Length: 200
Image (cartoon, rainbow, N blue to C red; front, side, top):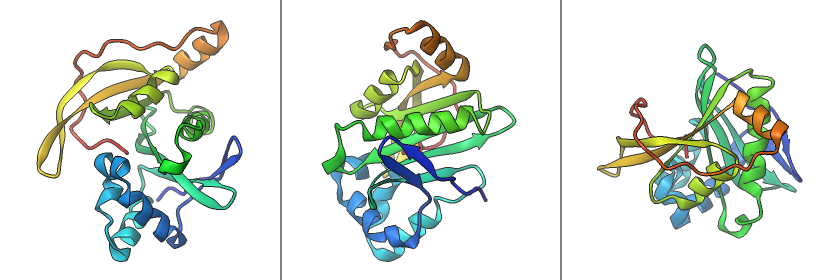
């Protein structure tokens, strides 16, 4: 199993999950925006919340609590980590009171630095449901290129769901920073990715 290392994210700390985060998970599950797009929405009681926390540790996953001065305020993760191909997928969400403050963006930047640096990955992917405009905006702001729409990529609550796919290569990030290029949005097309739920 992989253990998420401590990372700094602006004024916040990225730390591993503990059983003490149970109330935080239940609060996230009650938020309509988070529960609509994340598996945490299925954690409707203490037993399910603890089970969800336990699932944050896996051989192909690193999952962090975004901790603001001792209070958990969000979550960011690397999932479907494939060291041989140098690929992983980023997921994130933030409690309502802490949105629109750059919390998720700063956390994603910290995870990117760890992924491209210590982990030596070469490609990071963000996938989100088509209705998740906030996740799309974050991906665009970080320079992830839109690669297409993955149709009927997974089933949520009995309904097949489409996903937008964005990706950022380590070489993209270096080039953007070197040339100060604007990070724009490309029109989505179609893409062939493995069928699986997004890591949100």
